[in-house]
Image (cartoon, one colour):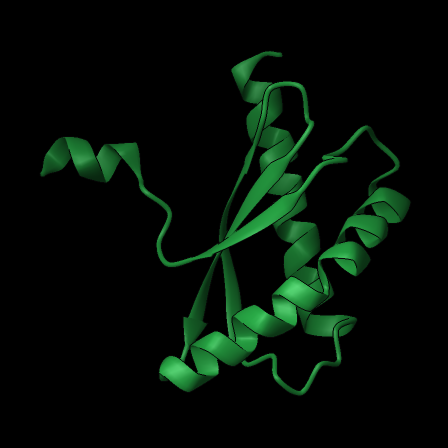
Length: 107
């Protein structure tokens, strides 16, 4: 798959998950969560979703637990709303900043 197309797919998944977190997920454990990046494999078989959580350690762990329990819902929601061949495998979450190659080059 071409790099530009994969970048567009990653951006689309990022935007859709962000909207999902704002409007659809009603878990009280979910704090202020921001989707920072999405990395999808070339065959669209799986995706990693990077998130950032605003708050202390307790809020961070509660938000990650809420996201972990909502993985299946997120996967099904993406499948229904994007109507494309999307990650069918595990959707993994990671908390923190996405490693930016441009920033690493400047360091």
